[in-house]
Image 1 (spheres, rainbow, N blue to C red):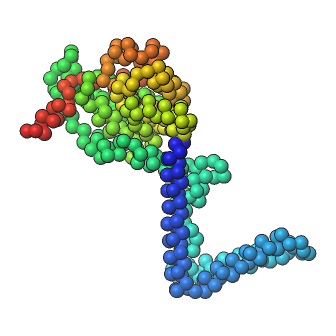
Image 2 (image 1 turned 90 degrees about the vertical axis):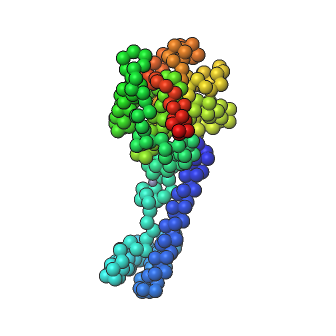
Image 3 (image 1 turned 135 degrees about the horizontal axis):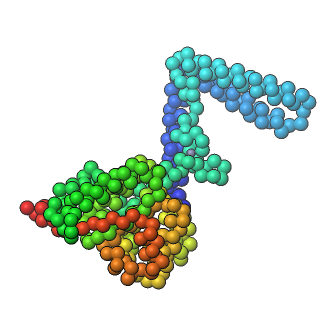
Length: 325
Ligand SMILES: [Zn+2]
């Protein structure tokens, strides 16, 4: 787990708890005015509970009987308190703290194990920290305009629009069926043909559905891998490996070194072994990738990813032209 992510999540739990404690305090003040006898009962219960813990550590005769007697008194008082609250129109647990997660009582942990709710916070924090956040408002399936893609035939029989319609449909299925498949996608083709946009659309829908998605340009990814390796940031590495979907944008634009090639291969391989999904986009053609990367890397890539070829005019130029009009 990323250290800064972790401390952010712990702060979120703290805020949740503080808010709930404040709400409880206000409810108590309300009851103090409306039903002061309930607060008297609460105080009595508190006194008995102190008495109980004192007896438990004190050597004495008939200890069990004394303990039972106090316990029974406490039960009676609690019942009386609930009855008073309910008969006056308040919920029975009006004077209890309300947890967002009953399992971990908003601490994130059950003993030393992370609670399920921790993952939900992780998704949120991961998203808040991602470069995607500001983009995703615009880049969603809803805003995807197929009309930008040319209907003219291009490179053989398929037009860019017909090709995009196919990829678009399969991407929607990819998202809807995300839990049930372990498909990786390789988006490749010339620049400005919608690869990044579409990967953003997929990311947005998956994040909205509560999945843990990490989006990185390949350059940022290499920086992360360096950080993980040389600063011993194992948490960062773990989140890159364990996230539900890692999107690597612009493969081939990172600084190509022995380190980056080796670490990229290791990450890819680890994720494949763990059935953790990836989407990679690149402006390079397949034969160009083969000449840049090692054979073992590209064989993993071509063998374990569904290849989606993007082609057509550079849409960024087209959009800019349209905007100028
Ligand atoms: Zn929990």
